[in-house]
Image (cartoon, rainbow, N blue to C red; front, side, top):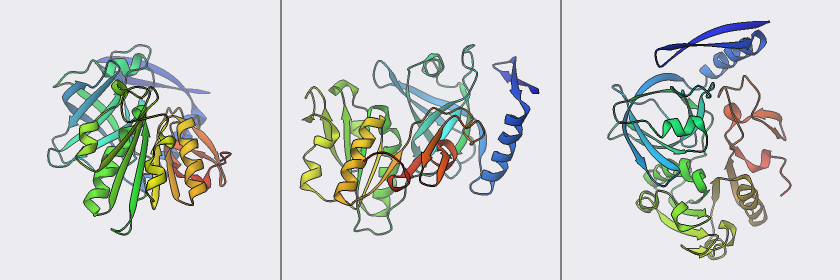
Length: 294
């Protein structure tokens, strides 16, 4: 049996046929997570859209009211209007929360119809967002702790806000950012305002040549926690290094998502505690819970 849901998108009604069992599971999931951290569906106003490369844009959003509490590593589900091929919301990592200006930053890689449509947004437009979703990174408990935040590609997005909170707490943060070439590196100036920035590029056009796990900082310095986000092969390599070095490590998984609340089960990850939904039980997970062969 199916339930017909009518969604108003850009002034036009769009019908969706959803299996009733999925819809019921969706509602139950929302009720379960509502006790953990309040979720919001907000029409946020676009402040600016800045092109960082030919395939990346930085979207800054604001609201009339103060933005809700947001943990580093959480994400939003955005509704994409004016894109007939985009039926589901798109999960986007929260790049930064500017409390002083009441702004939410989203770093978007334009890789499909939906995200390319987001890149066409202009100042003054409205973007409907469901937030904040998922669990965040583990904050330091002592000011003497040293954190290494490792990012690759657009996976650097959640590390900026996390790094800022670590700095504000009083602990030490170092960024290790990797890309194929120099022009693929994103927000370097913003990262440099927060902590030490180490860079690797596969072609050697910036920083040290090679992958992030080849960088000399891993040999020359010791860390209390490593947090990483990016392509899975990179995160597996970082997790392998952390395990060998005996350092706590968390990864931010980027499994394909749909509902964002653990109802559709399309982002399930096998863990030592059974199958878990990355959108609800993650996206940040300690490597001790993963079944990766590291």
